[in-house]
Amino acid sequence: MAFIRQYQESDFDNMSHIVGSLVTLAALNHNPIRSPPTAHQCRETLPRSLCTSEPARRLAPYIWTHQYTLLSPSTCFVVDDGTGRAVGYCIGCPDTASFCAAYPQYVREVLEGRGRANGDVRLAPPPPDDDDSRLPWIDADTGRISEQALMQLAYSARRLLLLGSGGETLLREGYRGTMHIDLLPAYQRRGWGRRLLEALVAAMKEQQDGGGLWLGVGVENIKVLPFYEKLGFRVRDREATAAASTIIMVRDYEEKDKESAVGM
Image (cartoon, rainbow, N blue to C red):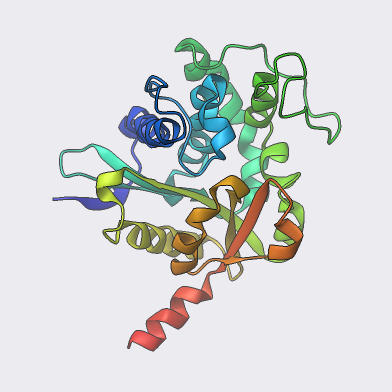
């Protein structure tokens, strides 16, 4: 019988498999003649433009998944199918500022360690953050997603979480935490998403006094907004984000307390 537990180191490959399985469906729905991609790929919540990019599929877990399980394992939860296999997860960190400060450990141990050893991380590391510039998402020579731009995100927590997404403003507003959630299709629409989020929020509230958390949704995947709204999230500024590449959603920690009070 399936149940929720905290992330374990042995879940590393299954986390990548979940990501790969979800993008297989997204990519095939978008382009039915395309061969199914392998593990260590992208996620359903990525814009469709990334789903057909081999570098994006390969690097996605290193941009949006593995740093959380390394640097904040106490706020990473999985759905275990009862055999020890992770079939869904909700991962995040309670404080993006502290997370960014600890990020060099992730670069050393995962990007330059496991990721490079297994062939997922292939290009040379980008130069250190010396300014706030970001490489163009599309390579001017090939017209495709730039692997260099993906590497820049993977190697820089500042670019990933603070620049472009309004992360610094969100920090000032009290939304210090951030998260990602993914479930294999067989475990979707069965209440696991809400239970995962409840476990994550409870863990984050133990480490943060007040405030809340945020997440980003690509505008090409706007269909997932109702799912997050059912989990207590709201679009922070729909008009301001309508033309941007990412829609920022926020959730106050006390939202759960309000729901519990109503249900009592």
